[in-house]
Amino acid sequence: MTTQTSTRSTERSAAAARPSAVRIGLSRTVLELKVFFRESAAVFFTFLLPIVLLGVFALVFGGDDQLFDEETAGVDFATYFTPGMAAAGIFLVSFQTLAVGIAAERDDRTLKRLRGTPMPPMAYFLGKIGMVLVTAALQMVLLLAVAVIAFGAELPTDASKWLTFAWVFLLGTASGTVLGIAYSSVPKSAKSAEALVVGPTLLLLFISGVFFVFSDLPEWLQTIASVFPVKWMAQGMRSALLPDEFEAVEVSGSWEHGTIILILSAWIVFGLIFAARTFRWKRRDDG
Image 1 (cartoon, rainbow, N blue to C red):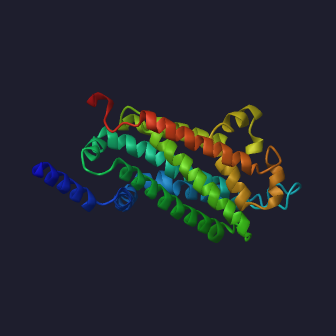
Image 2 (tube, rainbow, N blue to C red; image 1 turned 60 degrees about the vertical axis):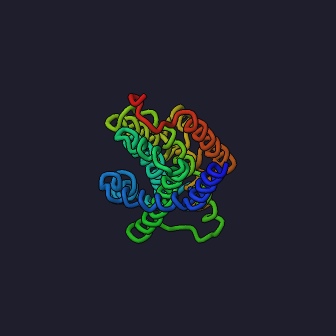
Image 3 (tube, one colour; image 1 turned 180 degrees about the vertical axis):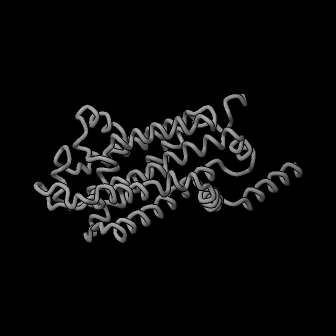
C-alpha cells in the first residue's frame, strides 16, 4: 500500500512538472516557423506566390487605369485584385501548406515518432495552427505593403472595414487550417500529396474570383465555386478592401456577410468532423 501510494505520488509529481499542451504548442509554433521558412519551395509557392502574381498582373494589365467606371467609383487593377490575392494567400498558407506538410510527415514517420513521445497530441496541432496564423499575418502585411508601395493601391481608412478584414481573415484561416489537416489523410504518400493538393487548390482559386472578376465567369461555374470556401473568402476580402460602391458589382448585389460567416463556419465544422474521423498518426502500411 505504501509502495502504490508512493508510485502514484511520483506519477502526479511528474505530470505536474510536465509542461502544458499550450506551452509545448507555443514551442512547436516556433519550430514549425523555422522549418517552414527554411523550405524555399514552400515559401515561394504558398507565402510569396500571391504577392508575385499581384505584381505580374498589375504590370501586365496596368494599362487599364480604372475598372467598372460606369457602375462604381472605379479603382485600378492592383486595388481590385488585392483582395483576391489576400484570399489566395490565406488558403495557400493554411490548406495547401498543412495538407502537403502533414502528409509528408506521416510518410516519413515523423508523426508516428511524435505520437510515441509524452507530448500531448493537442500540442502538435497548436503548433501547426500557430504557424499558419503567424505566417498568414506576415503574408497579409507584406501583400498590402507591396500593393500600396509598389502599385499605388488604395486601402480603406474606415475602422469597420478593417474589422471586416479581421473576421474574414480569422474565419478563412480557421477553415483552411482544419480542412488542410483533414485533407492530409487523402494522399497515400508524400509523392502523391503535391499532385492531390496543388491541383485542386489551383482549380479552386481559378473558379473563385481570385484571378478574374467573379461575375464574368459562366453562371454554372459560379454555382460550383459557391459551394467552396475560397469564393467566400475572396468576397469577404473585397467587402473589406474595396469601396462600398463595388457591392453592386457582386453577383447578388450584396456583400452577403451573413452568408460568408455561415458558409465558412460550416466548412470549419465539416473539417473538424472529417479530421476527427480520418486523421492518422501512421502510414496506411504501418498497420
